[in-house]
Image 1: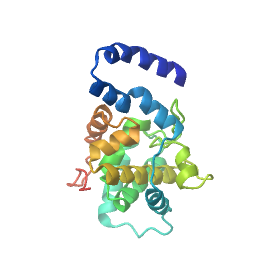
Image 2: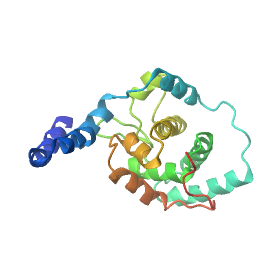
Image 3: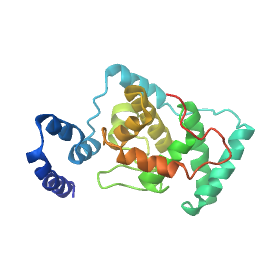
Image 4: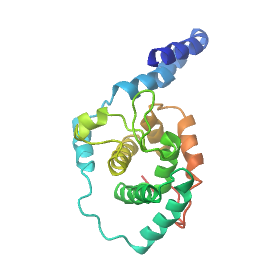
Length: 218
């Protein structure tokens, strides 16, 4: 299936390639959908040793989270209700909301941003698998486990998947200094705005009771 997608992408891009300038051709190579598919499916991480060490530290699970405060509880209740249209099990919906809030705070991300990303990636199906093998709510590729976590980690587990996804997004924010570029890198489409715009659109659906629903400063 991957080969078919690559061939189709090449066929669509060929006329543009022929008529493009050398500079435009270089940009097309760097940002092509085919390149994005290959990178996301094969794990072309290009991570520096210091980045890998930092990511491994970030991916340590929360052993004993602090007792939830009032703001946390209100947000979780609101989001549990909002996502119930996609997640029929109330306990599962609450678990998603709680872990999104916890790891968003831990990695200094907007929880609404993470909900928008989950909506785009998996539509809140924590057993989702993409055509290139990405798994779970935030569609994390298995190669991240081998490189940065533990081979035994279960990416279909709600806590594990959200922890990986938030850590990976924070890594890209630190590297690229902009939320939109970080989102595109997460998706394997760096240099394109389609994916970030889809996430922003979905993000607006999850306002909850928090007034600071915009993404936090990077």
